[in-house]
Length: 76
Image 1 (tube, rainbow, N blue to C red):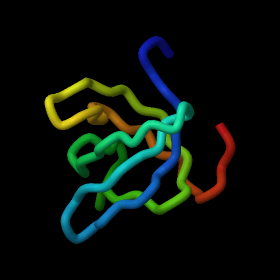
Image 2 (image 1 turned 180 degrees about the vertical axis):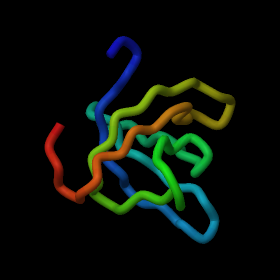
Image 3 (image 1 turned 60 degrees about the vertical axis):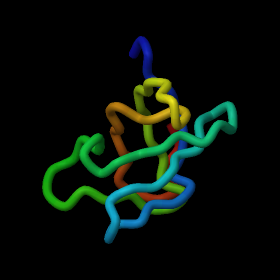
């Protein structure tokens, strides 16, 4: 998957709809609920494995598409 990176959820506030991922290199990446590719209510759990694409904004790295793995602790 070109352009995709591995990471995990650092924290996510479901009420506010945003949080941060930690990339495989340790970088913090902002994530908004609208970028989460899953049916229904879009939320993430701390420690959950994800793959994602990102862009660099004036505020820092931001995820543009996030594919979560269903269970906390799943290995990629």
